[in-house]
Image (tube, rainbow, N blue to C red; front, side, top):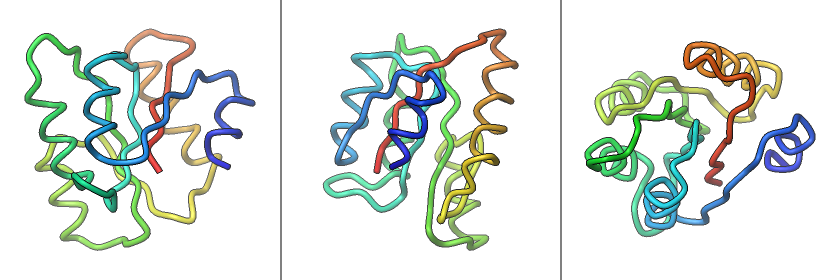
Amino acid sequence: MLRRLLELEGFQVIEATDGQQAIEAALGESPDLILMDISLPKVDGFQATREIRAAKGLKSPPIIMLSALDTDENRIEAAAAGCSDYITKPIDFDQLLELIGKYSARDGRADSQAASVE
């Protein structure tokens, strides 16, 4: 559903079904923004974020962590891993669009790609 809503807003969405695919997509596609879920098979969102941040030659896209849990521990770990922001599920789509706009405006881009991991 999130993918469809983002596409309706004009975003190109690259989707990964696990943390390893998310890393590979980030390295191969170089997205403008990444939506990263914490709970992913193979590699969790924290580790995937750390690996993306450690990759040499990759621009540093904003990474917004998605989680069903709104805990201080998760927020702290997300920030330590290199996430730019944190949003809880169920996702308030208007709030998500505001965050995407915030990071797109910072980069001077009118439209961004969003790599969605669910």
